[in-house]
Length: 259
Ligand code: DUT
Image (cartoon, rainbow, N blue to C red; front, side, top):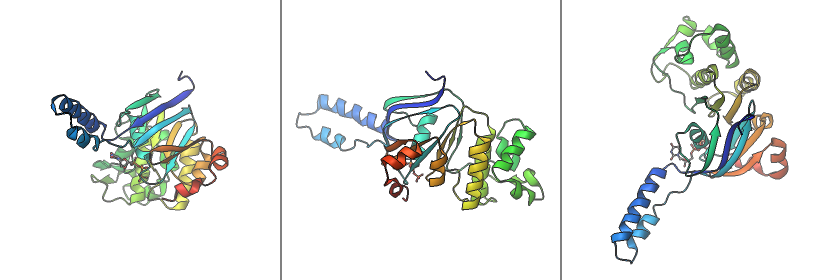
């Protein structure tokens, strides 16, 4: 029942090279039929079995709540978002969500056009919505410094932008879009601590307060404010629950966030 739940994952396991794994499995089965029973071919293919990038992950997120996904580098945080998006198909388990997703990738893609074009990304301009997003993403000052303001042209790849400007444009684009579920992959990369704090408060907590949000972040302050925390370690769920339960059940958890 998804009436109050926006996102649900039930015992989900996935591998990036699942396709290759299945192919090898098929070849192995075919070879077994023809080969002498000494099993050399079978062993060879067995060694190529892939390890899952996400193992047995379960979670649910109610409408309007924020889930923080934390874990060291390579623990599977981006892969989890890709899986919710449907880019990574689980080999086991179930994923349910009610539809419209807005996704901001770890590195946002800049298309040739103005800054405004890059935020609207094909959607209609709504002045109130646009201005709120620009403010919440701390882009107002950056735009004020440009003679052409948000009509400043950008080249493909965003070479004229700083890493932090690019990250904030990517976030603004994802937030401007109306969706049921927002997936934000490390939206604070390249931002200084003060800007990060401001954007977390103004955008993720205030402007998006009624939105269902999955945010990849390992910052302690963010985990504290999130409704739910998922801490991944080597693709496995090290912890899932509230921040206070995290402190109680996994007092050593911060060692996992340093990587
Ligand atoms: N991986 C792939 N293909 C992809 C993405 C990831 O094979 O398209 C692998 C690389 C890594 C594992 O999945 O071994 C987990 O990577 P992911 O990017 O999901 O980890 P992360 O927790 O998001 O790492 P980081 O914090 O460095 O972004």
